[in-house]
Length: 328
Image 1 (cartoon, rainbow, N blue to C red):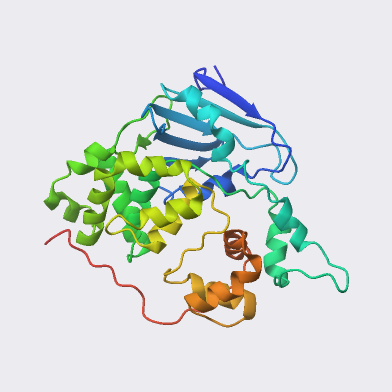
Image 2: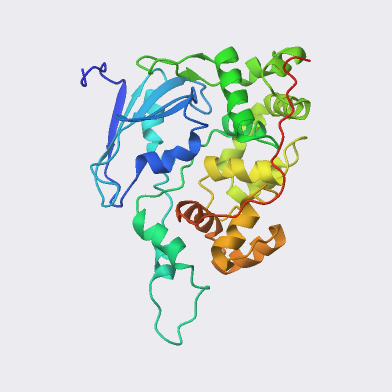
């Protein structure tokens, strides 16, 4: 027994040689505090999923390193039929295949006459110094991530989180013990295809979203193979699926591939936030891409650091009003 936990079916202690902030790194995979599939808790981050390829279910606990500021051991424990495969892929899950050294070198003070990209504002550069354990996770689970992102298309934060909880609680399955209470496996593609059309309304899922999710479920096997392609290629191929546009594709590969350079164009707020953080002025998608161009290869790193910078963004325009179909 490990405390109150049963012995895991597989375990691995990663020694990454770099700082790893486990909650910060894996936090982008959690869809709200009540996400049934990913939970950040005092003992670490719990994840319940099926291993790509085999479909074997697994419950994973990634314990934090002793410090998020300096290198240290990261224990990974797994239970269930997919345990061995999960721990074997833990380095990718934590973004340890991604080398930040080239980006960090760009942030170093430069001597006079040495060329380089534009200097990041102090608050953004300081966000990197304050969070050396930030990594970009790569789950490799294309369909799971697509389903979560499709639910976020053109809806409010609360609506997206509600839709994901409804989907998992209604059509997911029990996760291998000792998953914490309330945690479940995401629904399989087969389960998604079997959801009646009328049921989507009860889940506060818009018709365009449900159609896109069905298209994803119908192409699940082919889509999962995209995990083996470069992020840019995978994102481009994802847009061939009806209902999956460039924003959805980008948000997906950011998590499945740990994409360092894929920026979500078409986001409701992102361009404005990047513009304000880098220049003090709002901008549009084209302006955002121009501002990030000096950081080609690292643009998503810059976006993540802007989100951690503490910069306060102005609020303009009408709030997005959610359409509620549940009683129609």
